[in-house]
Length: 174
Figure 1: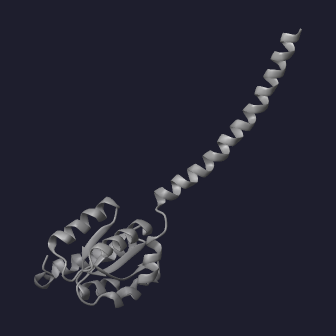
Figure 2 (figure 1 turned 90 degrees about the horizontal axis):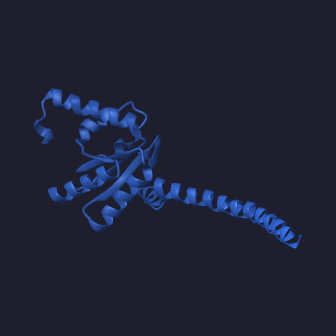
Figure 3 (figure 1 turned 120 degrees about the vertical axis):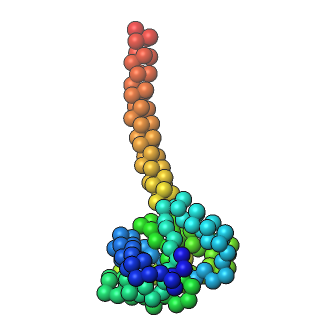
């Protein structure tokens, strides 16, 4: 969509859409995409959909209007040049996506972001990307919970088996 030729209604719709994104999503990351081809941006979008995130190319003037007076207005400083936003409620998956994509495509430059009301620097975003995902954390937790259960089952079964062996031995001797 070419934003320079948007009519008044399209601009209002864009601002309203950004306002809903600001309120609905915990994490919004801002990045530059200067020099990326349409195929590269499409590839990033496909990968974002797979992780449950969304990508939106922005109009800096309109996004600043949408941010004005909101809880996330502090992030308006990020909107200079060819910017886009990525947004999600899963901070680890989204940060991993952008961090990994920027490693293989130097044209994508992470500028910063906001999580809830906290401004995120590039360093904080990269640190978040190193955390285990929600699925990885769940798997580890289930593994931790299963291990003691297996041990308890073994301990409970062992004395019962020993008692059965004693009774069996006693019955054979008589």
